[in-house]
Length: 300
Image: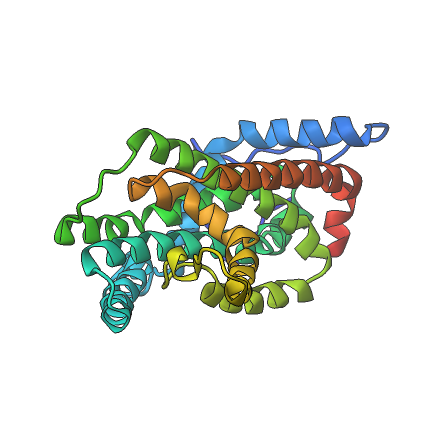
């Protein structure tokens, strides 16, 4: 049986897809899900190669190619950052790095979440015409997003190099924060990938909500702008902080990398919030994947 992809990619002899069973008769749901993940991991060369080629194909006829990904973010950082910083009277040497890290982290997070629907839907031809494990397509999507996010690194570093803010990044905390950042996003995107395959309209709803969440998440404004001490007349403002900051999942995910990058301590409630979100995402994914893995092909 031939294998077809919407945009064919020539595989080298070292990167072969191979064949596998999605499930076999008599196989339990849990054991089948574990076997699926194991077989998907064994094909890491194939999904890593395809993830990279997908990025190259997207901009293959553009003069700048993959440079367009960080370029668009860079223009946003250096146009909106100084403009909004001067309007609000912020210190640009502190605000622009703050905005750059927050904007990059938010864009990466939304790309993981809103793009997770492509994991299975984008590989529909391969799924229906091959016996590759379903986890193969999840790993390909995750690798694609991680590689894409690494292209943003020069944009994040530029404000620190040019403006030279008086900051002392917590490098150990930053490395740990990056690991946690990707871990929680991958867990969430894996869960949403199965859900979006069944309910396509929810993808559009999530994309629309991310535009609203950008405005209410501390990215273009500081958290301290809503921090007020005491006074009944200020209780409404404190309520807004509780809604848009303390209960905002995007804020806590962004703080995993932004706080240590700016040399600030990570809040205890952020670590608890993200840890709980990760556990819920992992349990939710394995529950959904175990119960509905065999139905994915019928939802495509």
